[in-house]
Image 1 (cartoon, rainbow, N blue to C red):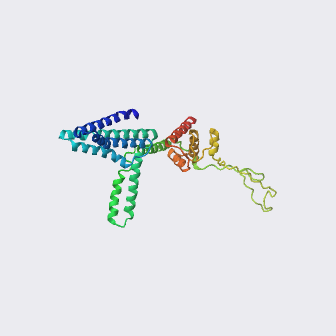
Image 2: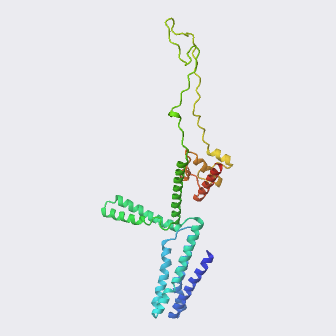
Image 3: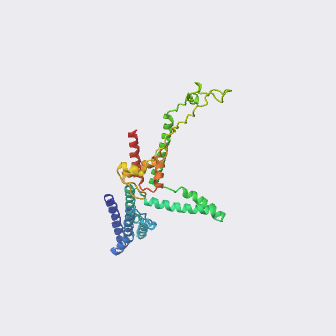
Length: 335
């Protein structure tokens, strides 16, 4: 930042020297020339430093600062053009103060790009989008509820104009949308491959399981049928004892208790993650593993992140994505 700002400040200073020389050649008084330089290039330098300072702090610049960066050099240009004695001098005097304007805008833009690269936050884009969304919300409400039909129509048209500006110039929004679409494509490909490579379930013969053969009981026929009743007695085997029914073992085993977050954290050797508190990388993997297998089938990345946010856990998007990648790599290695 400092290396790039040196030539910008140097050219801005040269512009100030040129303005001073131009005004001195006309008025022949250094005090007057210094006043013009202070009102033009000097004030522009102050606003430029304010812009750079606010940008480095991650804050958006007030509108007055942005307007002043162009207004003050423009005033100095008009003064130079007005005091010039010839057309050629007027053109030169008018162009000279703009060097400070370009230098100030260049430093502000460079500082902004550096902050966005290091922090991932574009305060200026957020300010613009917030202003657009506020106006859009107002006009949508006005278009729906205003008693005057003309006012409703005007707000309806203004809403569509504002809709084109939502997210304009926000590189982070574009990256996030690409991530969302990439995850959707991943989920779709996963579902397609699962359908292609899933093994079919072979049904039993004729679709019906054969019934077991009846057990033979003393005093019965081989087929397990009780002899018929005779005329002399009620039954051929009157003293046949009743065979007690054997306990039936259930076919489906009882469901296993789900693994808790505390148990996963214990196995990983880390403290149990707590919602609302900063988490280490290992704790992020523990939470995502717990959320992924809290349902059947396991949750996808988007579903797990939604559950992660809903549960109140704290973690940046990049850290959560790296933790998910680590979890997936462990699953592939285990497989």
